[in-house]
Image (cartoon, rainbow, N blue to C red; front, top):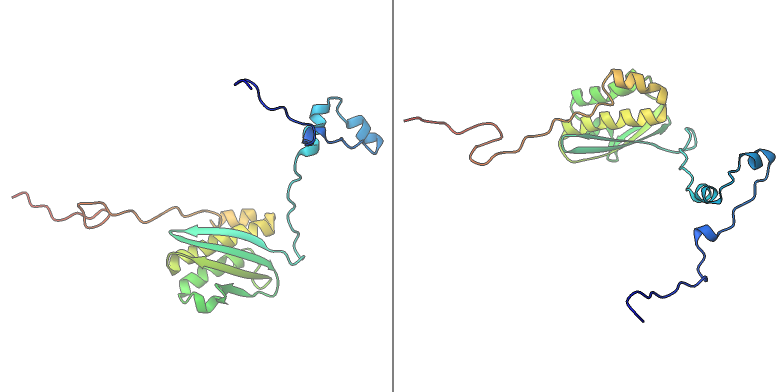
Length: 185
């Protein structure tokens, strides 16, 4: 065998292009069918897009929120208004009044308080960062639940990611910006 010779492929393995193309069943499909066989094969082998669950089927609507180093994965569905964070009641997890008020503002502005069950998995950061992450995640989940709420959520900045992060400490300094005292003499 020389260096240019390659083993011949056998026809025992069927490929996607060898698969028969289904004949059109109606007259409209016959008229719309393209004449080129290559185009029909490409259309026939394309995967179908994933379908979104409709509300009321017991399906969840998801939203992911981030703030500082905190991440919150929010799930909502129509229900009686249950709100849990990390398998604990909302009021027990967020003890700060400001954090609770900011999170509930999202539901109040969209008039969905008491109509949805909200379940949150939050980790990383502190309570304030997690509260900010829950706000963004809840806003995104509500947008997936009802796209008509998009303008309300945007007007109140519930879909805007707060990009502020902690600046790193630099060497030769005690902090990110602070400097050691300088003495000229």
